Amino acid sequence: MNNETSVESAKNLNGVIKFDAAQIHSHLDTVVRTSVEETLNKLLDEEADRLCNAARYEHSDSRADSRAGHYTRKLHVKAGEINIKIPKLRKTTFETAIIERYKRRESSIEEAMIQRYLAGVSVRRVEDITEALWGTRVSPATVSEMNKKIYSQIELWRNRPLTGKYAYVYLDGIYLKRSWGGEVRNIAVLVAVGVDEHGFREILGICEGIKEDQESWRNFLRHLKQRGLTGVQLVISDKCLGLVETLGEFFADARWQRCMVHFYRNVFSCVPNDKVKEVAGMLKAIHAQESRESALVKATDVVEKLKSMRLGKASEVVQDGIAETLSYYYFPREHWLRIRTNNMLERIMKEIRRRTRVVGSFPDGNSALMLSAARLRHIAGTKWSTACYLNMKRLEEHVKIEGVAMVG
Image (cartoon, rainbow, N blue to C red; front, side):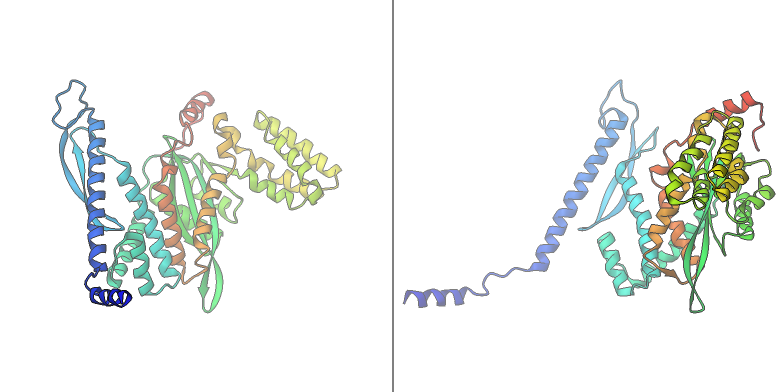
């Protein structure tokens, strides 16, 4: 009897207590948004106090700055949109890691959006991805407009004027796949990185080339020159087809440094596997010399040694090309390690390869260029470009001592 009563009571209570899941989620999102908004604004105020060396309205002799109000910026989080109040200071520009992280996220999302379209993702899936990225869902029309905006921003960045002087310029190209009349063909993307007069690296430009030939390099160098590239004293690159012949047309006073690592690879291609280690030690001995003259003397000894080892082809490669790898000796000793190879740019090209591999074959050359440029633009916005790469005062001192005129 008691069991029947309990069952009946349970039936009567069924449906009395109901949970509105949507309302609960909405309430939780509101709580989270409010909490995140209050926390971020408090952190921003504390950071402003630290920069001013005094709290708001505090009278202090040690005060370094004072407040000048604030401006509001919207920030998207998983729980929705929040408003953050960014303080303004009278003397200095207020900078915060929160805003820097937000900028980097925007830059990374640019690549994701471009890559998404190139990979043939459906519009519905596009909306899902943007929701995952931002925490808010956007319409297909909005996505389309955003892509147009991104492409235009990348073009503006790609064609921006180049100011200052860049003593060292690194050049390289990479082949990507594109569809052409039902076939898959190669296209070249050419990239230039420079070191300015303050020793910081800058991505100077990126252009599409039909292939790494003389005409493609000519168009790329003309593009850089027209945008204001000046002060070039040394160009570092592999012995790309057509590049060396073209350099003199645009930078007649600049020297050319053939990448030492690429040169080694060329020599090793003519050497049996069991002798590569020995030959590598011989080549390194050439570039370990104290001067260009002693390096050339050592190179002569290496050529004779290779001949005695019956490595005639390798000896010819060394004899014909070793002088092209010794141009760095004309520049400050402190710079040698970083200007005798193209390794710095090689790492960037590997990053482009990594980001474009998922696409496979591009629908056209412009698509390949845009995604590659988006990756470079993202790299340019990281610590890569804010870390001093070389002390250029050494070059100024070297020029004064050697009595060599700076290239204008």
